[in-house]
Length: 584
Image (cartoon, rainbow, N blue to C red):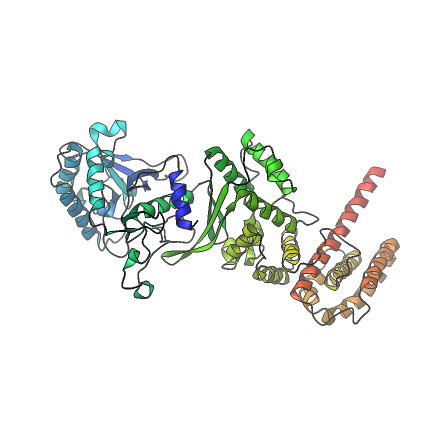
């Protein structure tokens, strides 16, 4: 099933889907009119419960597709169109207002509805100079405005909701439609959408929206067709897929995640809405677990099921009213000027997706584990970014990694390069970064990578990492923790990439450190010397134990070995301290 056809099916399953020709838009104010066109009230519709008033999402006639030209909406618009006022310079505000007035004078010329006649009278008598405080609040400028008849205001019936307005809007929408063609999405014949509605809510895209399907240059056309005729999608299908997508992308939607630069939406296709919602809740927990959520019974139950799935239990063995065969869809969108690019699209059964997720969890498993349990994917992505900022995540990396997780394919090698680069740059080796390195080793290189410290694992990269940690421990034991720079700060990058250059220097330095340790703690010196000897003893006898260079795979194992050995020192220190407290 294609992206568009799956979104059309998702629209048909929306419990409160807007009817064709309407869409949910941010509305801030309502102008209430008397029957003679005079203004009765200006009503602030915004939600003022937060620090800053927020517009209300309301169903209004679908907005026009604006580019650089002037194009008014029907029965509503921002104040530059409706009232001819704006907070900016307003170089074309007069022309915008004139276009709004002309549209409605033409549309309402023969209308006998009392509410629509009141709007027409208002537009004939209104001049922008009438916009004066306090009757007209200053923060109303550039906000979206609708109209209502004063007698209908208390019943929340707005002008665009009146039957006469809906009939006029439906008639206007049918005018100028192209000849019927077979729709590539539905397969039925219908009027083709030359311009598809805008998709809003994609992080980094234009606030006015961007197009998922568009043709605007001769190079994109075929056989002389223009715009939407190049790929015939009916008006009905275009409305449905964009409406569903905009609903999923809304702020606070339970159908979206932010994965790097990809705004990710997901939905399930099941005859039973409860099963679809359960699959969606589980998927959201896979990639963005949030322990801070309110701890009601439903959230606790989902958390229990997630914990069992992460331990490897099969979905069918859980006490869930959810079949593995439920179809599931994941779509990642990223901005590309005035258009959207598809970073990834996944369609498969929820059972298959869950097994791929469990493989990802097993790949990432490391000891000691991350402090916060199962971090969300965005936390892992930050470990690849300069200064740990989401906006610095390398382009395309998030989409490629997410695609690999969903499909069970190989992880992008750019992920390995990004993590190794950050480790060399800042010297930070934490559970998140080491987990990524281990996952790539297991899946991409099909090699062994121990979850916890394995003294018998004889890969030279892993052994050199352990040896580096032992040298660092000797330095810390001899000089304390308040040194200006440890050997990790100075030499980690070179040691992990070109061991021969630095390990001879580290070996001679460790002799001095161990000598000093022996004077303070002979037992610790003996233990460190035994450890260093055992690591060196596992080195392969065929050649120099310190090679001239290490491959990217061996550099990853170097980091893994260093992490395991260093944390083993911490573990023994804590155990010794606990034993001392117990004896007292």
